[in-house]
Length: 149
Length: 140
Image (tube, rainbow over all chains, first blue to last red; front, side, top):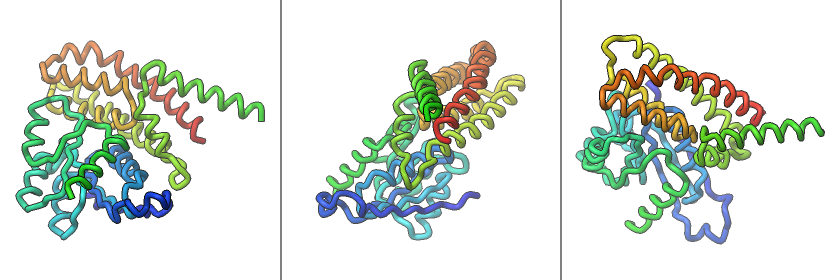
């Protein structure tokens, strides 16, 4: 079983003009069974420079995401794929909300079926985005996070 | 020097043709923009991962298509994975075909699969080699 990975990016090399306004830390959990998707989403988040320190962890399925939370980890944003083996995104989202996790959980899916997306959203997502994620989509999530502080 | 410039021009033209023919979309440009000094081989790494995963998925799909009756749930699951990774890399044409195949699964259209399987696997196989060669020329 793949263990979750952690990456920390220090945003201190950006413009000093903006650094005073930038949030101190952003922690993101990327949950997807596809290694390529995890790699791309991890890179997009790490390049954004939306916080002075960006911490990214990855998990390969919903159960790993749950285990991370059970071991005490918490995140500002969870990017949750819908269809995964062992525990899918819908189930994982339900479980996380039942545990009292209040993080922003964003569904990320290439699913075509509206019924699947509706069930996913009703499990407790803050929003559901279509793959592929882009820098603009993630920036907008961080802006929402800031607005809701 | 002149030879290098010529090769770079050829690679640029090949790259552009992949966009012009609809094989790649804007997402691939996003990947190129993610490449930087801290990760100078990022695009090559992602493309290599994609080819490895695609080969595995296509092999699984071909195996599943040999079974009778067809297991549409399994085929749909493979196509879902393929569509997800294709869209993440900017593989526009493959993504579109995956959606079509998923529609066949939803309607239980085994003939749709059989009609498209030959030409579409051929679509992926020779262009996979062309894209891989193009990608390697760009990044090496």
